[in-house]
Image (cartoon, rainbow, N blue to C red; front, top):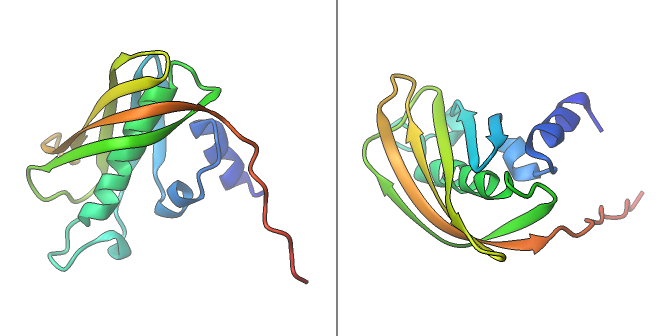
Length: 144
């Protein structure tokens, strides 16, 4: 395992290959809050040369999931539903700030806001997440 992958796993508390691929950076992850940064590369942009909505939604989803997990880091969460409002185009370094609004034993209700590097609000999302016990993942067997 490379040092970058290990650092990513330490920051998020779990290895998330898709998040590694996109290049999300964890800034804060505790007490019902999370903060993440993402600087879209050309391959993360749409035909208008701004961050693609799918990349933004992935960031918002992970931001909410980590805010939910931050109060019980040994648990996993799965997204049950998510609503996203795009307010204006997002470019440059983006910051997502997640906040756990309420939780029950098995569910978390979360919101996150996405800001551009000027601090302008670009998107907002709410979501519902289910807490699930973390399972050990199995790596595919090599076919060499």
